[in-house]
Length: 148
Image (tube, rainbow, N blue to C red; front, side, top):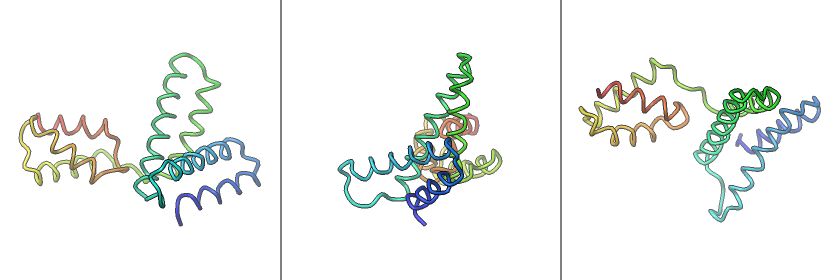
């Protein structure tokens, strides 16, 4: 089942349940998918593109949520947090720290990295292999620790 069909089914369920937050968030995701389809790239939207889109939306919500919390705007922070939680339902489960460390060690060994100069090679491979499974900042920090 494609993301778009899951989103459409979710919108119907949210409308029946009168869940405004869920309906608003799912419509936002649907809107972004439609924009991606009509952006001129042509053809069908791939699973990788959908994943990237969801990650971008989640990151935006998380940044907004943090900003609103810092500024004491709890009313807006609650909305962002609700949307973030709903978007995360459609993202793959993130790796734990132990799993991420093991995967990064394997990538470092595979690439043959030994110093901080090799960080670019490691991050390039890690970003491709672990796309959607780990946060980029978290990966970067862990790679720095492992290469140091």
